[in-house]
Length: 339
Image (cartoon, rainbow, N blue to C red; front, side, top):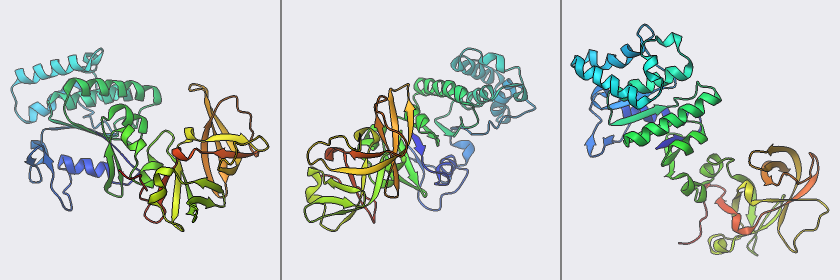
């Protein structure tokens, strides 16, 4: 499970509570059916990898892996066998790190050694606290692939804290979105993207996140009106809103369509009047993100690379009603269609 959320929301604190390094203010911590609140960290059977590598600088790689066994006075044969197995699991080149001290290793090599030290103790639970934050982009991708391979091989529970959504999507079978110490939503990436529970989740998760346009009001005719323009309430939500209700309109960037001012619009198609701010071409995926401003709000719309618009041009943004999400403005809760 991957845990994401803004800085200071409690992601790392959650890991420390699970590990027993901090005491929860309230509530209980269970591993399966076993209550862990009074179990010391050393007896919880966890392996934890930190953002900082937390290696012993005066010890060679093998000494770092062996330390767990030596302080517990475990048999030498067991220790050497676990180091051998760990070296095989970690793959090509890992054995070469065992005779070197951390100061002679690159950041990626140090993180591999830190992960190996976590594996060697044969934990029942893996905890990762932003382990790739100190690596450059190329090393981050390679190490992410390595961690994914290891998690599939071990098939045990892992909780992975990250601020990088690509890491969360790649590594997490499920994703927990946190805010202010609370898990707002838990599910697969596709589940959360399709059905965000509130405006915070919708505006946080996604590449890019959902556009959120505040300042809309439901009219007696069940339309949406604001200084930006007029939109239609999705048919599935007609019975869920009331005249005068303040709502937040959400839509994904790929759902919108940019039409330059002066070009014909589909007849009676609701739209938003906006001005182009800038363009962000994405040649790898064959589209450009057109960032526009409507009123005081700036949002992005995905468009073909051959769409010719420039900064400062007036445009109309068309959004099909079925692509709209509505959120109650005061509470930010999603206004969902009836089940």
